[in-house]
Every structure is written in C-alpha cells, then in structure tokens.
Image 1 (tube, rainbow, N blue to C red):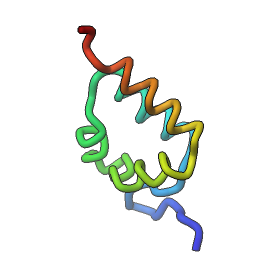
Image 2 (image 1 turned 45 degrees about the vertical axis):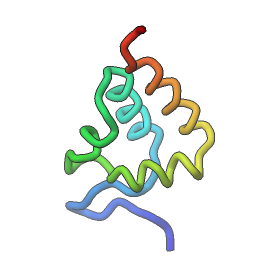
Image 3 (image 1 turned 30 degrees about the vertical axis):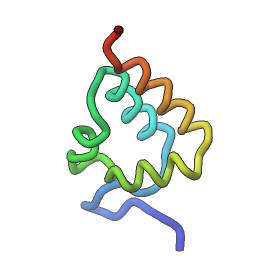
Image 4 (image 1 turned 90 degrees about the vertical axis):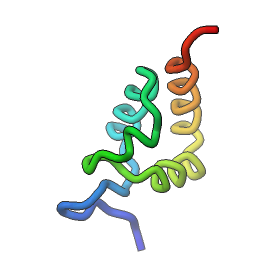
Length: 72
C-alpha cells in the first residue's frame, strides 16, 4: 500500500516541498519535535522513515541540522 496524504490528516507521502519546509525550520534552530507537533507537518516517525529511504533528504537534513546549531 502506498503512503498518501489523507484529507484532514498529517502528510505521510514524501515531497520535496515538505522536505524543504522541514529543513528550513531545522536550519533556523527549531527541533524536529517542535516542527512535527504541528498538524500540518508529518510525524517525527514519518520524517525518520523518509530519512532512511531517501539519501538525498538525509543529506539535506544533516546540512540543516548543522546550520541550526549555535557556533561554538
């Protein structure tokens, strides 16, 4: 069964637009937990599944995390 976006539910299907939104907020210093508590965002579990299945997203995610960390 293919993952899909259910009307009124959290997004579950990977999209580059959603990946960009998540990574943009991570780069601003927000935590994945904080991002994924919003109803318009996928669950953290879904994001971790995307990371396991999408090497390009995993690289983008890692860059965003490093940008969001304070220098030091």
